[in-house]
Image (cartoon, rainbow, N blue to C red; front, side, top):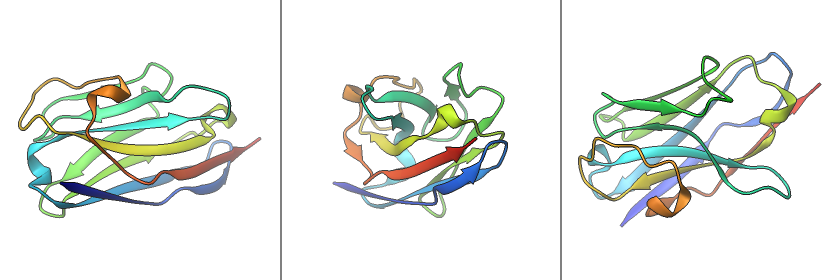
Length: 127
């Protein structure tokens, strides 16, 4: 089992920045790809960004490309999502998730591909 605990988030004005963190305990987190998803009210959960087990491969949704950066520190068992130039449409509950396929190179972009989930954290961007 892997337990994921998220931190960060909150309220920010448009154009501002926030950093989310996803800290893991349990099985070797460093072997798993991690994705960030978000879900706005009345909408489906959508992929935001993903990183493979060693950080050598990343992938972003078109809507956040160039504004968000995903990174990981395997020594700290933590994955980060740096969000810059935030827009009101980025408002959502953000979730981190771990893909249980050890050392997979590919990044899955659908929620069903992930085995472990964080508790979610609210990000609100005011206009």
